[in-house]
Image (cartoon, rainbow, N blue to C red; front, side, top):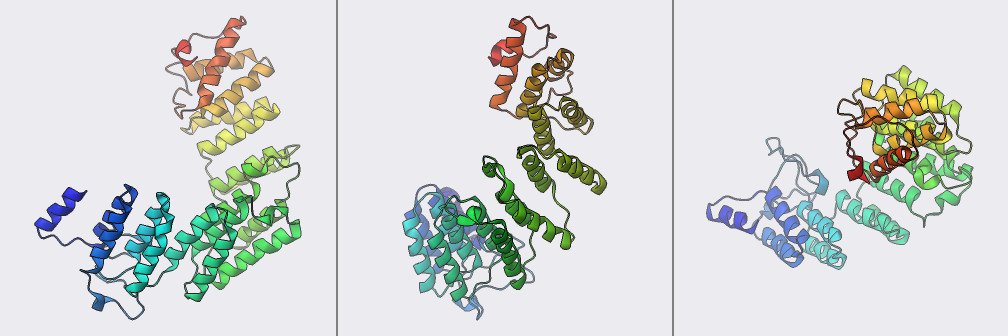
Amino acid sequence: MQDIWEEMAKSGVRPALRCWTMRIQGLIRSGQWQQGLKALDELSKIWDPAAVPAGGAPKPQPNGDNDHLSHTGGELYDPLVPSMVPVNAAITSLIAIKEVDAIGTCLQWAESHNIQPDTTTFNILLRRAVRGNQPHDARNILQQMETADCQPDIHTFTIILDGLFHNSGIAFNLENPEAQVAAVSDIFRQMKAAGIVPSPLTYGTMLDGLLGPAKWSRPKQLNVAAARAVLDHMAVEGIKPSRHIYTILISHYFALDPPDLASIDALWERMQLEGTTADHIFYDRIIEGYARIGAVEKMLTFLRRMPKEGKFPGWVALRAVLRSLVRVEHWEAVRDLVKDVGDKDGVFRNASRLSWAKKDFWDTVYDLRLKGIELPAVEEDIETET
C-alpha cells in the first residue's frame, strides 16, 4: 500500500478523498494506528478549507465522482475538502483493532479543524456502546447527538433496537406485555417524528430480537404482544413481511410449547397467496421443525419441494430428516434419502453448506449399516466422513 502511495506521489497524481480514507483505514487496521492518525494530519495540510460550506460539511456536487462513501458518512462525490469522512473511517478502524483510547484524539483533531461530528460519527460510537452493553454510554452519546443537532437516521434506530432486544443488561424483556407494546409504539412514534420510514431491516431486527433463538429457552413467550404490535404496524403501513421475517416467525411458532401448528399452516398459506418465494433457510427451518415434532409426511413434503425449486437443504436439516425417519423406522424413506444425498445423481447431492452436521449424518448412516439395515451403496466415502 505504501509503495502504491509513493508511486502516486511521484507521478503527480492527486489522491482523492476515497484514496486518503482507504490509506488511513489500511494503516490503522494493519496495526499502524499512529501512522494512520499521522496520515489524517497530512490530509489536513493539503485540503482547501475555503471549499467548506457554511454548514461545516461538504455539499453534493452535481458533476461529482459518483463514489459512494456512505459507510463513513460520504456522499456521491469525492471532494478533497475538510470532511468527517476520513475521521469516521479512522474511528471505525480504531474500534476494530480495540485501540479505543485513541478515539478521543480523532475527535479532538476534528474539532481543532472546525469539523463537527455528524450522524454517522454518533452512529459509530453508539454501535460500540450498544454492542458492549454500556447503556449509560449509549444514553450519553444520544444526548450529545441531540446537543450537536444531529438528526438520527434509520441506522441510529436500528442500532438502538439491536441493543434494546438483544443485550442481557437491558430490562425490556422483563417488562409486562403492555409496557413492551408501549415501548415498541414509542419507537415508531420517534421514527415518524424524525421523518424516518422503517426499513425491512428495522422490522426484521425488532422481530428477531423479540422472537429470535435467544428467547426460545424461556418457559413463556413474554414478547409475543410486542411482536404482534410490530406486525400490526407493518400491516397498517402496507408492508409485506420479507422472507427473513417469515423465517423468524416460522421458527418462533415451532419453538412454542406446544408448537403452534395452526399458525404455521396459516403462515405458509399466506406466503403462497402473496407469492412470496421461500429461500433455502426458510425451508431448512420448517423441515427441521416438522422433523423435531415427528410430522414426517409434512417434513418430506417440504424436503421434496426444494429440488423442484432449485434449492438444496443444509446438513442440519438433512440430519434432522434422517433421525426423524429412523425414529419411526421408515426404512424405505431412509434408503431414498441416503441415495439422494450420496449418489452422484442424487437430488440433494449439492447440499454443499459445510457443517458439523454432515459428519453426524454419515455417522448415523454408518451405524445403521452396522445394525444390519440395508442401505444403498453411494459414492460418498463414508469412511472419510467418520
